[in-house]
Length: 363
Length: 217
Image (cartoon, rainbow over all chains, first blue to last red; front, top):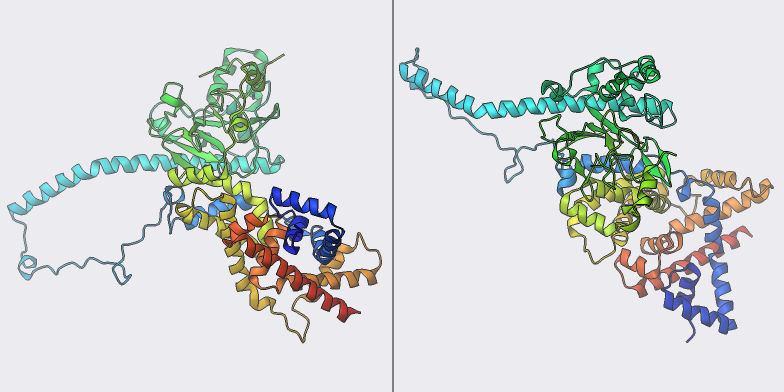
């Protein structure tokens, strides 16, 4: 059976299914009139082909691709979904609390009854009033103390997030001046550990205060003590002398945060770099080898704060995040080492090297 | 020689998980729907970033509006992911949403694109200048460049003036290279309808171009 004009059009544009394509292919080789019809169709489409060819020289075909479009789309969805949540993913970040609406859509406002004339006329408190007030105060204290505690935790969590944001900003500024690459982890020398980011940022004037490298909760819990970030000269000297001091400096210099160990790509190590990906982890509260899943102890085991490559900081209940719930403190092969590929984010504590080194160990 | 992590993978005969377990679009969307995992959602956005933007850019013909439509598309993916039918391909569902966004964008833009039969369309000179600039490297003669640019602008405008149902078929099948079956799935019409609409669109374009050629000669 000879193919129809629609089949021939589909054949020319590669729009047919495999079996249809084979059938038209046979017909084209068998019938000269089909070949003629095909040539006629090709001629009809020539202006469109020419337009496509010329437009491909410009941006109309997408060559003028706007940088960071996916990241902005994710941010847009996160922003918009605060108002119209669908699944938990973006809806859960909701910070906008709309007042409940009445049937007519108007905000419900509680209307207080006027104080009775009898009560307002009384000039002085009686004994029963003191009893009632004391009971109310005690009840309120009982109810509010966990809330006050929770509020303090929230404040400490927010302060920690603020620190991570500041370090993130410093890293972005550093990357801007270094071809989109964040502070690298050197292969050898005193800066061959994750904590290298802190002395480099401080030496470059990207961060001035040492306390920014420390989570307030971790300091308050006694896990860390705010120390002066060592200068590059001090680190070099310790490295030359190859003494115990270098190991101490390396374990302290990254503060209470962990830093990206980079990843491997076709057998080549790639240091941390800025591609603005909202799902790639850049820093986080440092891991604790004593907790399950190497979760961070900075917030009493109550989750951790994570800085993502797009600059956002989010709290997570666990170090296992994302599709497949992989730990951010181990690579895909369960190792404390650089990521196995570009999608594998791994965060190392201050003294952890991205390379296989004396610091390397298997969990 | 110092061993690398990759050496270790090979020593242990391990394969990277990403190589042995590719995650499909549908799996990512379902994971997002079930757990609200943002990374799954972000992966989908990144996977389709260039392809979908390119589609919207060409469909709408405006860079800014295409970006808006791209964001709008993924907002709809988020809002409507509960309605996604797992037996359907995610790509078709995504393009269906994107096409609706593009149609809306073109509709909003329409007053600015109105073409009068008596006067040249708004922005025609700019379009001719733009195409002449593109032809500079391939066509040395300014006169020939102008003729070619005018002709191509006319081609572009005849395309833009197609009814929406024919225009979308051209965009999906001709420019995006979709099969009849995939285009039918995107537009939620039978395959036969896609075939006949494409054929009609090509005939209409051929007629329009023939008129341009007549008026030019």
